[in-house]
Image (cartoon, rainbow, N blue to C red):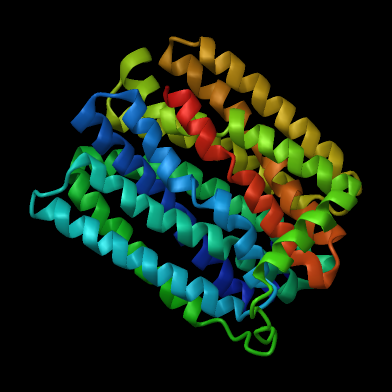
Length: 367
């Protein structure tokens, strides 16, 4: 019998879905860190580094809701597989340019746009598959485990990227990211979920589906509040991560290796927080976890903004990660528990639209 924390792994398909998501998340953060440092070295500009985060996240703004509509209308496994293949091809292209020495700083932006587009279109499908596989009773545990994987990826990805930069360089690091993306595609292909996929009924009703999702979330008081909190967090909290290379070099006075560790520390906090949440037997106050988590994270961000000492900054970012764990786990759980079956993907798409405010925060911080 599996421990309570890992009960979702009792589902054979989830044993493929979780590592596929984890590897995809990790390679994403590795790529953002690698290209952020690449752009900083080539331009010496916080603004151009801010554009790295903007490029990676801006597709979520126009496409996040579309991803929710197609998650309710098409084969979710196929959606994830095709978006992963597009990301893989963009990674191969950037790796080739780096290896032959023709890569320019601006090449990072279209590559990250492709990755962000795939992220926007497949994230609602990844989340909806969790509910398909585990049902209402298992969804909170599975989402907490998924958040644990995302937190671990935020911890491992930047740290690994910093280590790769100092050992085999940005080109070598990009080769590793490309290989990881290919492994994620293979794992997704192993999912046996054809019976759960819904028949296509997208047709010409895309706009109708988008409006239906917006109206549904607006009428649900808890979902409406959660979406507003998500907008604030993605506009004013999460863009910090794109400025960590600048903070590390120009404020704290460290190089790529310690920069990666600094960027990984919030992920460690989120990882620990997600383990705690996944281990809780019954969670009845999801909203309190969400509010408490986001307030803790904002408070830690304020303290970090005043720090000029590298080693003092580490525990501050650890606390920030703990807060983010409470927010991230409950954000998806609330949406899937409250939304009706036929509206789940659309509701997750509205959450994706709210997350799409993040790139504007990246521009704000970069400027």
